[in-house]
Image (tube, rainbow, N blue to C red; front, side, top):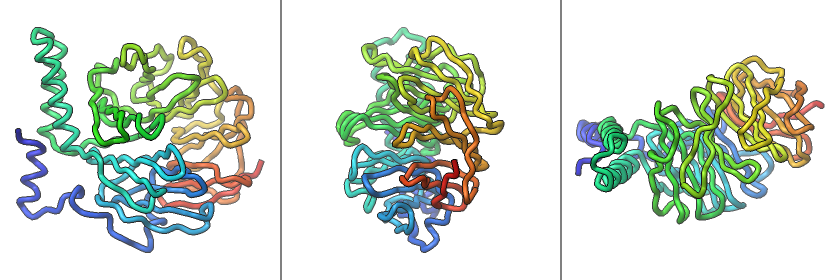
Length: 345
């Protein structure tokens, strides 16, 4: 079985694939484009372009670059505890660390993911040879493999050190039950017939949700092992979601944020006081919910996303992600790298 034929031929022509090239060490890594950030115990870990991973042991005052076995752009990072975490990115990359981000090991790439996807859909066709849907899914999986390792994972979430998911472009979703040693495609376990991009995955109020392109919000039916689409009164893309009290907030284009406190049966629109795309959100230790748009404008809610107020920051910058570090400080990532900003409430 030929896997990722286009990538193999490219290497034969002398091109060095990013999956074969470690991230280049640079003193400017913390100032390069970074897409995601997470807390690992008392540490902060940020990820971004060219496989750059930087770690801070002093709440963002200083940063050290980690060695990474690939130079694919990384999009998101998540830790289940102070030492164990995962990062995902372009070319179907999934990386794992067991030492709080100091070193990383490749668990999955786009070539392996495509092979797993084709094999899983072929098994389904073998079980349901007359199923038009199964045959369409297999054809789509084969097309993905022919296109090579070009599809990114865009988010990652783990319930514990073993059970986790990665989601990405064109309905890509994989689950692991053994900490990433093996991965199972869930390509056929979503109500996503148009193969919309899946941008974020997070739990809220005892359920697991995925936010995506085209107003797509999926909710896991654990019994059926299937992500079911919710009826959402918005057709623009959602880039993230965050739990707030017993409610779920999804956010995305044009400052849009929708709130549900009944598992997605009904939704109310929140006045975020933002009019451009909301790209990131987080909940602080005191319960305050923060949302931010790509320009770096930040709003806060102290009533579980019912109302929002604009928040001033002493140092504003375009941003991609943020995390609270305590004492009214945020660590934010963006095109200029990672920085600490102080909230002025």
